[in-house]
Amino acid sequence: MKKLLTLAALIALAGPTLAQDAGTIVKPDALTWKDNPNVPKGGQVALLAGDPTKAGSVVIQRVKLPPNYKVPPHTHPYAETVTVISGSVGWGMGEKFDPAKGEMVKAGAFEMMPARHAHYVWTENEEAILQIQFTGPGGIDYIDPADDPRKKTQ
Image (cartoon, rainbow, N blue to C red; front, side, top):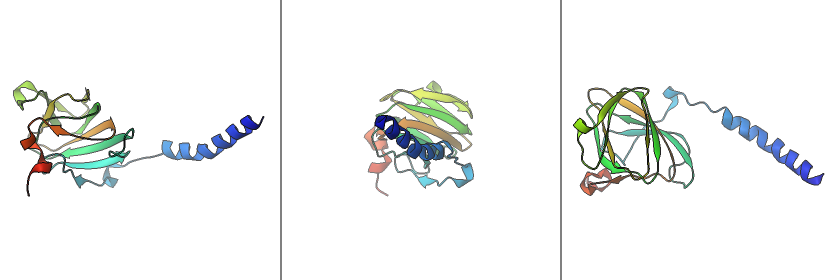
């Protein structure tokens, strides 16, 4: 009986927290866009949920890529899912940037990428916004270290 009462008390305490989490709404005009030092200058990120610095945290973020932009070949230590929210973006697989071997896709396209799989992205004449989900911690490793914007001097 004592165990049942303890369980009921825990459920009662957790109920409001669970309801609050279930009711989270993120509106596009409320996003805070920040420069993303992990990609070439011009790329921005807005965090929707999670903490990309913490292990095991489910992270959902949006990434804004300006027109005529490219992210050189790179890998991530985690598997990720990517949905194109707006615009068009090119996706290519491999360690060499070659748009001819990739594919330009429009809003609504979805991609699943395994961990440590080399890929690259680019835009043409329009901005694109991607929604990316992964389990932290976050990270990006460029195939050619010279492409890493974190290592370039301003």
